[in-house]
Image (cartoon, rainbow over all chains, first blue to last red; front, side):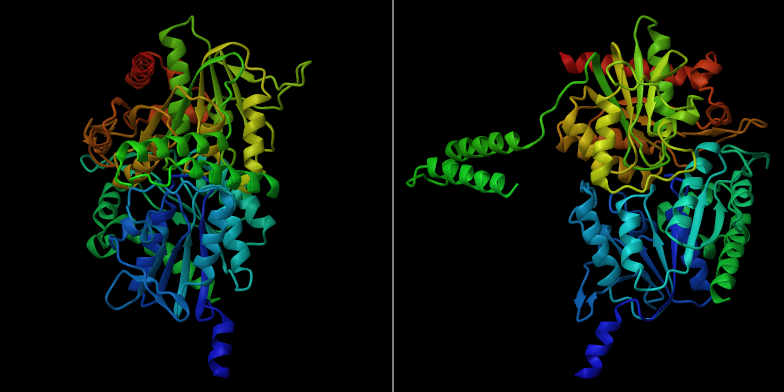
Amino acid sequence: MQQNKRKLNKGNLHQVKHVVLVLSGKGGVGKSTITTELALALIHAGKKVGILDVDLCGPSIPRMLRVGKPEVHQCDAGWVPVYADPQQQLAIMSIGFLLEDSDEAVIWRGPKKTALIGQFVSDVAWGELDVLLVDTPPGTSDEHLAVLENLRKHRVDGAVLVTTPQAVSTGDVRREITFCKKTAVKILGIVENMSGFVCPHCSECSNIFSKGGGEELAKLTGSVFLGSVPLDPLLAASLEEGQDFLQAFPDSSTYTAISQIANTLLSSLDA
Amino acid sequence: QSLALACRSRFSRTLLRKVPETADFNDSAGERALQERQRQHMARGLPKQKPIAGVKEVIVVASGKGGVGKSTTAVNLALGLMANDQSKSVGLLDADVYGPSVPKLMNLKGNPELTDKNLMRPLVNFGIPCMSMGFLVEEVAPIVWRGLMVMSAIEKLVRQVDWGNLDYLVIDMPPGTGDVQLSITQNIPIAGAVIVSTPQDIALLDARRGAEMFRKVNVPVLGLVQNMSVFQCPKCNHQTHIFGLDGAKELAQTLGVEMLGDIPLHLNIRETSDKGQPVVVSSPDSPEAEAYRRVAAAVVRRLAEHLR
């Protein structure tokens, strides 16, 4: 009886080795995409991974992993996460699973969002995980503050910042970097997404969203540059289908980019 | 505050007492009357919508999803409205408190001056008066505010600005369906909403939620804009639908709303945006600028249709 009490007091994040936030500040740069691909890369490297999707207004993770609309069950320790695979290597929690209708709009003000995120952090029975990735919405608001406040009892290894190369994105991400410094969240590195598009017909590279902005931002703020991921229609299509891009296209430059980023991230976490 | 709550429950008790005890609950007319009374009672509790002084019509540009091009579309829509009819005066309000893009896109910087009446004077470029949180804070400073604080900031950006007389005020909304969206739609009468999306499913999911939100708060949806629809390689002219094909058109059909336009993914749009020289004014003869002007014309037509 005493032993059970002690276990409960340690909290649901007790057996989670590393917690990594995926932030941006700017919307639509590929936070959920990068979170999903990093999770898959880490799983292929033999790790047990969890994804906590705290984007309450626009939960993208369930769609990207095509887990459908499973029921969320309760156990003694709280909510049981949804597993994306039968081997239970990838655990997910998102508000997407709790909505009756997937088209339902979550039109909540801050306090309600804060309360649910508190529950997502403390009341999900994650079990043993090597890495818990936290996918966030754009901005620096209730959701971000709620996540940080609730994770304070547990260690946060740091944040990966995602940006596209163009000026409107890097501007917002600069703000997010300041936010991390103010809230003492270590910046594990910056990922430049949608960096260049290679025409499938003639292989000409067009910098639709500019190029190098992420790398410059890393230099400017003294952060680690984790790498660039190109704008790849195959990646976009895989996410629409819920396909494992890394398994399907191991020869692509996108695969190389994502694997390198995952490896760098793992080394800095294990260091 | 607790007194108000006590009064409200007294009102609802009075309301229910008015329903005769012998009411037949299968009586649909009686039920409808009760629902109508309840609706009126609830409506009394919501904030009153107050129009912005001097502004004729308010158009919001929203999406639900981040990064689909709301700000780029809002800026070029405002410029397009003026380009199509030079007699119209158009203003631009950047309601994205956390990630204000309008200063960059409109090449505007600096703190707004105050008028004699203590109103903020909007910054003007290309003939469009603009107001944004970006003018009030340092470029690198994050706005780490909870929703409730954001509400009062939005109120200031809307009401404490000397807009003058405007035919249209275009409001660039932030992504999501939360505090900012609720504050704006509950406090200002809105002529219509333009929903921007890319063809991707993941964007459409959120666009659908955005449309649902407007339906719930009784804001008419003027239509959808499909952004980043197709990319044409500048070297070989091969067309790639990077973000999918026609997804937004299909969503428009499902939701029963109109397609206001289709904007291609073109380097020129991003390059001119980064320079703060929006494509409608810097390359007015380009097909991209023409696409935005067509969206502006469709918005004006839909507004007129809705008024009728």
